[in-house]
Image (cartoon, rainbow, N blue to C red):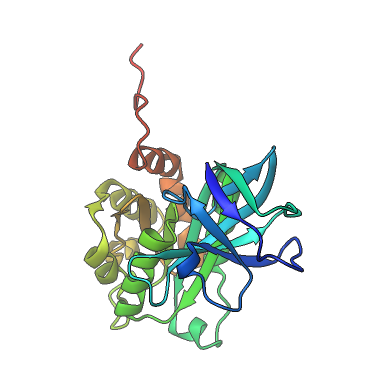
Length: 259
């Protein structure tokens, strides 16, 4: 349960976005809801519910300016907000939150359409229940990717962070290095599955250096840059992706039942 103060919200419509956070952490001049208590454990994709109505969906998180250790959240308004000041809202999580990151110098410069990233979103949405999808298109810069991966995992708290591009041996291919620098645990089985799926199509798959692992409660997987290779690689790991996220986030059910 999360207690919120809606007294400062005016002229807000369904579909608008507002800020959530502690009173001192909220930036001045923007539409915001003060969280009075209970905001620990929020993740992107979670919904805040009152009497069966989903009012707000968490979109992303950020560290508050000038308030040490304070976090603020961006939330999308899903339904008409109540005409009251203090309200207790239940937290609902249905489906998984996905952030996909496309690494492409040309794409980031507007010289090439990103088709691989949206394909990841489409395949995940068709295979798994999804609460929210956010896409990012950045140049092939190691430090940029490291910073973004850390933010998506530790601040916005996405369940799945899937990257595409930068897994080869070219001078600008840095996705594996960036990912290895920030993951906590490596998921070598995912990497082997991606390589095996690629080798069924072409011997060139040998040069893929895709890395998979975990950051906090988030699963991170690198995929190749071409849409064809993305489809083949993602199909190879999809059967284990949901189970991996569930286990990482504390699911205590048995992994297999022995008959």
